[in-house]
Length: 252
Image (cartoon, rainbow, N blue to C red; front, side):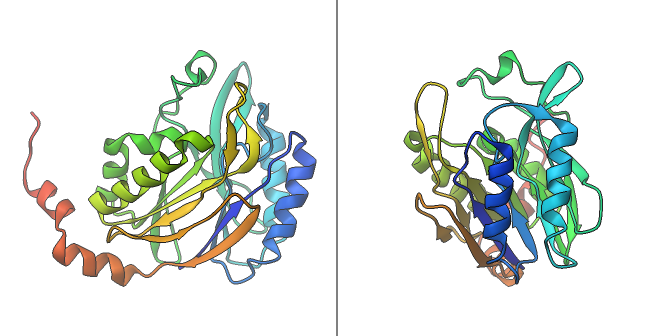
């Protein structure tokens, strides 16, 4: 599978961010799956229909058969705010919605974000793909659930500050290794948290064998990475972690 990571230099104006994404996608014509970061439209909640409208606008600029994973965005849904994303294909409506299961306590999200209720898995191009939004990657149980359900790729649209970038990348490598799957973390760049902490990219793909397939710097870019399922099978011959855990029940 050819996976494209869109590391966007995010502004506070949604229309500008949409145009920046479109320009970056001109360099991803060979991609089969394209992934956007968390809150790529901007740091503030937007009406859900506005987010879905922009996803359709972007997807319709893509070749037929490409899957766009629409990052995640703070969305206004009635009286609640939720961090939600969706998959979409050219000429179709958004589908397979996913949400952040555990809003971050550290940055105060639990004061206003409604938690997601379930994990989402889809199939595309012969792959099962799961999603963990931002801090959900830090919960090993969630990645293990997706892996035991057959996911070969876990994508992690995120908004990680520079001071936590190394920790985030290391966490992605651990999740990939302990589950022998691919993990793709997609961050934005150029933005900042309300407390002034900067967001400086560092998007990555972690291999199931404990290596990085790619790590990005702080620039706005789109990176095309080829994933090979054979690497999963080869690694599982040496690291039978999932097979071992299936054999034994440690909890009553």
